[in-house]
Image (cartoon, rainbow, N blue to C red; front, top):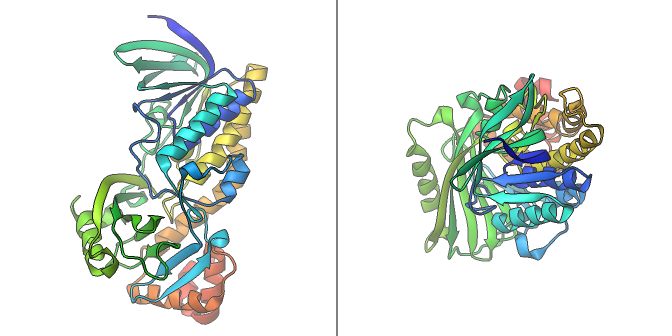
Length: 401
């Protein structure tokens, strides 16, 4: 069967990165199609749902209480011995500030794309790429029971961390086990409040708690929270280990004595360095598919939104010139790297060092930060603060300072 449709841009995957790409491509005049394999955009949710407010301004996303579950005051980071430090949400990094209702947020971003002129299809799965003379020229799509070709100037892989589009395009997306974090998250309700819950996003560190990872508590309302764990795949002997860690941690926290389960999701996130290439002739990857997830926090919503905007604007310009070659897409490659790459690399290197630390070292670090009065949280500032009080701890980290 020949092509039934022709678009300038086809975006595969309607998460935040895909919807932002579609929105800005369409707003710039590109005839744009956004396809989503699931029957509902934003569901099921596979994420802690935290995002910093500054991303909304940068991507021109209008704040709407409909998709905000909880506004938090900041982050609380707890060491293995129970000591902690708190930091104001404006300086706490990219996953703190708003705890979202991800399904509603994702739908809102898709609505913005539709308003800008993009077509949206759900229950439509990309099954392969169309190629001609070394260029990607479109995508083969299965929609309900029908399969057909869609011609396109460019295809965008916004299809998450397992990105098939990237693989089909021959972009090297393989991950090492040490760069994949297994995750498990419960939504718990009937949680007893304490002075900090539900006002803070909480992070718990330590090898007993979550080897080479952390436990998080992200409040959704005064008695409900996403309570999850991430553990490096290299530290898990079998899949059930991760549940054992999380259940054991929950059992020790008195706030969860009467807590009840509303849902449970499992998954994986990449905690890797960014891809060496995210573009080809007629193809680009964005968001989790391009490994834009922060390797320390495992958070990717904000980074995906920022890169999506950059990519959408570049694709709109490519539509004007009719040139979707790899050379033309370098503006996107350079643009997202200028904004994200250094931090992704730095945080990946820091993550690899953090994986080697003992609980005693974590206790010393948190103790230092408690007294350091940090205005803003970044790997660099943290290391400088530690260097002042415990110079012996930062020897291994010298290359990051």
